Length: 101
Image 1: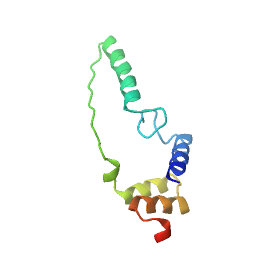
Image 2: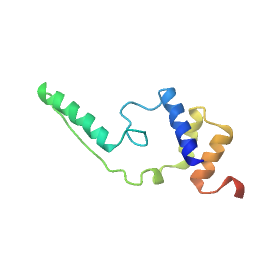
Image 3: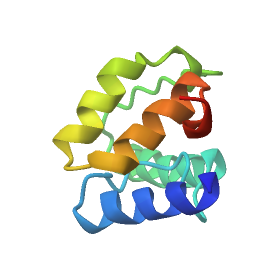
Image 4: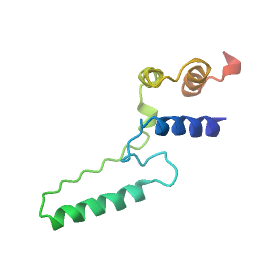
């Protein structure tokens, strides 16, 4: 169920252009490696043009675990994700299955 919901949610966000082309995490055929390859290309273009280039990479290990669940649900609702799906996501995030509520 999690995989199906995740896939459908990502498809919806992509369809309505709510995920930028710079997003690499959580997307099929994208990763930190593809992000680095794209970044290297941009850096090389800037070097060739003699532009200054600043780079900062931050490791947000377990960042999702620290996201405020209430704010995330509000953000999802602003993207027109509501009803049973939003309730299910809220239950999933809180670790309470729908059957136990």
